[in-house]
Length: 448
Image 1 (cartoon, one colour):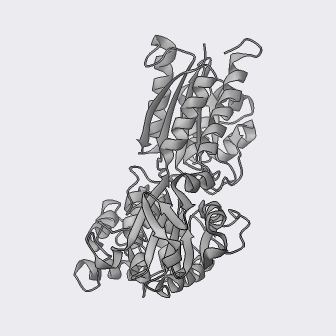
Image 2 (cartoon, one colour):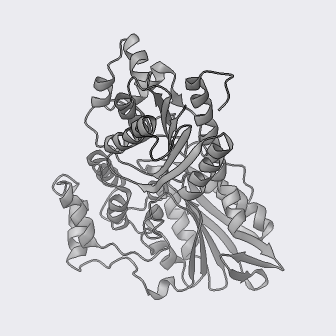
Image 3 (cartoon, rainbow, N blue to C red):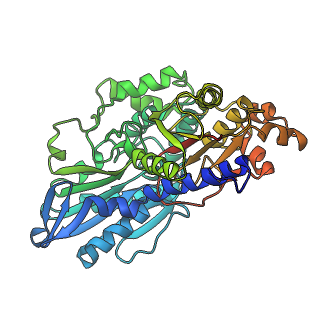
């Protein structure tokens, strides 16, 4: 660990270094390069060869927070072979491109710019012929960034449905099941539009379990969810009667068999589609573990599939920190326990924050007064909730420092106002847009 600085200061420095290593490993350009290459005039991806001499036109489409960087890697790979394309990205998440157009639009709540881009993406897919290759780039955020409301649902009504699901704490699987059945491109429908062209989808996963039909609402993957299961989500959170009438009526008609379902496994419209995951939370977590080892910590990956209510997850992580300091289990200090995944926040107050900042605030309360202990949580996309922060860090002195500033941690937590809390303390983690998105990385550091 070294003796040149106090343990608390060392933990803060090391935590940021470990997070940087995780973000570097999740770089989408490298993810594409690891899984796709051109050799002997053939594009090789996931063990499959696409003979470029026999391909007519190459189109690149897609959506997601990391899709601009992924598009840059594809341009570097294929250059002038690319006929054209369009990718929907979150405002500010851009890259320099020459063959593929970027369309900036809204996330997490979709906007009209996203609708316009989605229509053009659908037109490009539908215009591809049997000899053409459509490369689709999907990353975290694609569900919101690829809005194509199915009539009679309007964008505003879809936005209201998204807000309701976010506020009640629905997880990504549940939200995407509903969104697929309110869309004309999600749930395999984009690949069906492109048929009979060959479709290669490169995916940077932001979903626990890397389920192809859930990542970005699976625009090129067979959909296992149904209209009926979508209604089940609304009923679970008691919002069936709260969503707009057009949404409720479409889902009910679909469940009654009056509207065609999304493509299911074995659908002929998907037979020429390859879905390839090029990056995931595991890559980021493994890199964090390697960096922590390099810095002299005993390391353990708790899980990359952590989900559930953020405050509950924070409590578990705080308990692990206490156990390490008191008994040396599961690791003796200096120790670094790492977890990944994506939690949810049930909104109770009117404050500003995100799941990573809320995690840090809840953890701060739980570890108040503990020496040589730090917890950190950050979104790998660099934007935690509707804020300019990726997350926050907390240690045993956080609560004391807050009270010295006249801040009541419990009140800020009750108001979901973690951003203002950590901003006042100077403990927000700001990375700026990272142009990647593989869920969250959380660290527990226990110093000697």
